Structures are given as structure tokens and as C-alpha cells.
Image 1: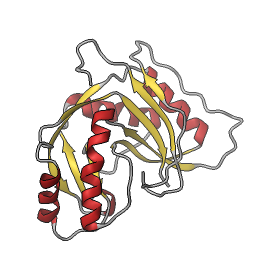
Image 2: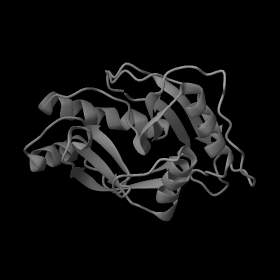
Image 3: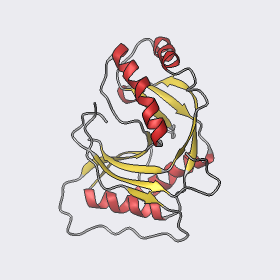
Image 4: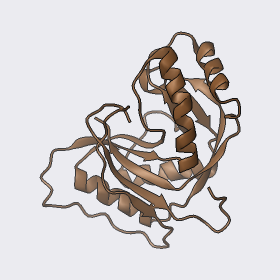
Amino acid sequence: MLLLGGKTYSSIALAPSPCSPPCHSLRLTPLPRFRLRPHRRSVSTRMDPADQSLEKVYSVWALPPAPVRDRLPHIMEGLRAAHDGPAFEPHAMVVGDLRSRRSTSIEVLHTAAAAAVQPYTARVTGVSRGSFFYQCVYLLLEPTPEVVAASDHCCGHFGYKRKTPYMSHVSLLYGDLTDEEEARKKVEELDKDIYGLEFEISELALYRTD
């Protein structure tokens, strides 16, 4: 995680489908974790009138399974050693920068989980570099219908409207770089088999990210 003054607030594990294969820091504030289980009926979201807490900024992250979470830090640490930058937990952004109260955010994530979000496969298609700090160097994920639908589904429940088209990715480094090619080569040196890596996303987590 980045040292952002928070922890994980809540995560939901998606119930695996029968055909699915088995599968510091930004300080982020954790909420309870949940398991997302497919559900045929939608659940209404109710705001907690007793929650008088101030609105904060939250994000929904998709968390890779344990084998991938154990593998990616090696790459991330190698990049930080070469280029500096904060440590953070490996994740793929599903919904970003939404302002809400704590209890409401947890409730909405519960509701999204109950409304048929299922585990889905993510596949790495390349290493890329973005144009700003939080998208410095990242693994680009194939935008399959399942990957995009999971984000669309959660965005709909949170009433979140994207400013740019959804690009599923797993950040490896936060920072400001001028040499993209050097960073790409570093990733390949650290893990030559990262291209084409496939893993199942079966857990979503709510993080406070202000």
C-alpha cells in the first residue's frame, strides 16, 4: 500500500465458478473483507442515517490471488530500488476516487457483491508506462468482457462516472520517469515470464485512498 493514511476497508471474495482454474507502503485504511457470491436478484442499497462521519475518498481494488501477490512484490521492489517511489499492495483498480461515507461505501460494495459479480480471469498483455504519478509503470491487462463488466457493474452501484475509458492494469511503480524503455527492460529482467501471466480475480477490496 502507499503511505496514504488508510488501510484496507473491506474486501469481498468472489465465489469461484466450477470451471475456474485454482488459482512499505501507502498506508490505506482497511474495512472488513467480503466474499462476492453470484446472486440472481439485486439488493437495494440503503444509506445508514446514523453514520455522521465525514465523506472520504475510497477506491475499489481487485486483489490478485496469493501466488501472484507473492510474485509481484519482487518486481515492484526491483523497480523501486532503481527508480525510487512508495511501496503499495498489488492491485487492479476497479473503481477509483469516489467520495462517500465509510458505512455507505461498505454497504454499496456488499450490494455490488450480491448482484452477481463472479470471479474472472485477468491476463497480462504487456508492460506499459502512463503519463502521471499513479500510472507510472504497470502491467496492462486484457480488456475482456468479464474484466470490463466487473468494473462497469461496480461503477454503476457506486454511481461513479469515469473521466476516461476503463484501462485495467496492475501498477508496479508510482513515480515520474523519463525513460520508459529502461523501466520495461527492468521488469523483463526481474520476471521474464510476466507476459501472458493469467490469474483469477476472486476478491475485491475497498480502500480509503485520499
